[in-house]
Length: 336
Image (cartoon, rainbow, N blue to C red; front, side, top):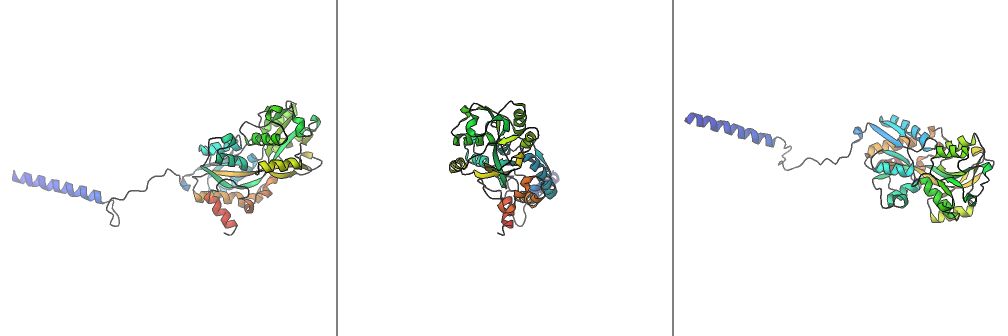
């Protein structure tokens, strides 16, 4: 009986020692065992990205063809499969970035600013998890009609069917503000919510009288229209441009060169900026590689706007915080 008790005692002692040994095995370098593992923040690391999506706009605008080229550049630089996606453009793109539906998006500088402040179409819905990659080129606000329509000024729009883009879109905001400066409102026209391709088709078919199109010139939809009918771009006179800029300082004066869309003379207009935005939680190094891929290869772009995309101007007109990876790239370019 005594031997059984001794064997049981010895067995329990061994078990106790094994348990103590296991508890102490996680300690390193004299750790007391009270240190905790770093918390999982939920942020993805660069190597975890297998796919990147760039939201653009409609196929007849400027964003889409540029987005396709950018996707190629990024894929080659990062090794991550990247594709350009058709979308409803600026305002919708900001919302999609906020919701995590894409990583990168084209957006107008004014729309990005509204989103960051929760103003206009983002009233009460501040988007603070999106930052800037950089500025690209001017986007001209074009009021397009057919030469035969007889519409030569903004005042001629009264009572006419005019495409103003989707409610809440960048084009809609531009249309509303330009109408305002000319003493008009949406109530003075018959607004139609059409994208660029639909505007082209509707103008061609005589279903609408004019269309607002905010995009880099030349714009595919307008070029397509001009191929079958003579296009006229309604000018923004200098005093009206000054009044617009005084109230909405993110606008700038712009000239549509003679020859664009077959125009006989240059046409005064106004523009906002085009930029790229990115989710804040993209790792800094990946953000750097994305920015480098775009600006280092911009000279290879076939589109006319390619020559305007310059690293030296990448931070011009940006009204929202810049992604740290993009900032790192621009600091290098500017020798900081």
